[in-house]
Length: 283
Image 1 (cartoon, rainbow, N blue to C red):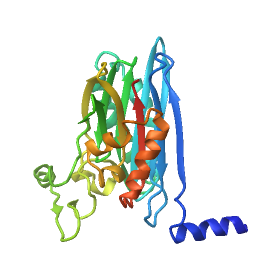
Image 2: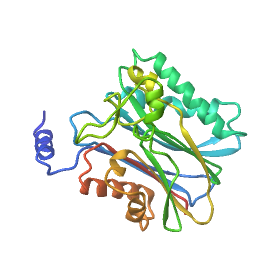
Image 3: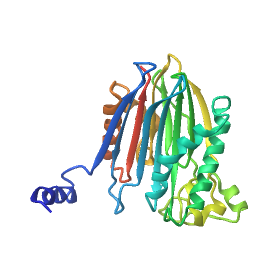
Image 4: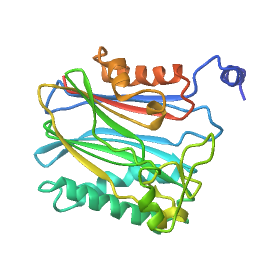
């Protein structure tokens, strides 16, 4: 290892420099006012980075789609990486995507989870949460999620959550009816079968009998009051409320800079988890 690399490792070990990060940005061709930016920061835990981001505008026939997602893995990077490569393709292959996008997304989520479980041996163990947002022709947002990554929009300065946090305690009755249980040990969060801190996720074959992959789906019209959207992993939401996150970046017009600033604020508040965020600005 070169001397510069050794010095960098020493700085990270004593907290004098930030862990590795990744960032990017893009913009709509249909509307020059709509832009996106993303930023990822590796957490302070012992495992490697397990978050993945997908963010791009895509032309489909005569339509434009903005495709945005945060995939937050647990126990392995395989499942979130698989999701990044396959989930949107599965959604767009659904024959009723344009006429009934909510139904198409629900079906594609189920199919993708089945594919993951079929490939469980090759995909190692573990699973992933997901939050996805599809912006259709700059006019309509269709948001879906399983787990605790979250989608929040800002309208006239007010935060509005579009996703649902799938917490084990909230879905305890359903889990118990399937033969599972929700643990509540002192000093720990509720967990499905004493293991997983979310009630819904992709993968997790060993828990699947008691775990759902059914997404919540919400539709939001983009109007003149819609300022921006945040998609972020739980590394943000453990230390910030929806309104605090909105207030943190509302003044930053560049979407990539806004995502970076949001992550840095989470770090300043001692978030130890991997942190991923996408900001989509609507002008």
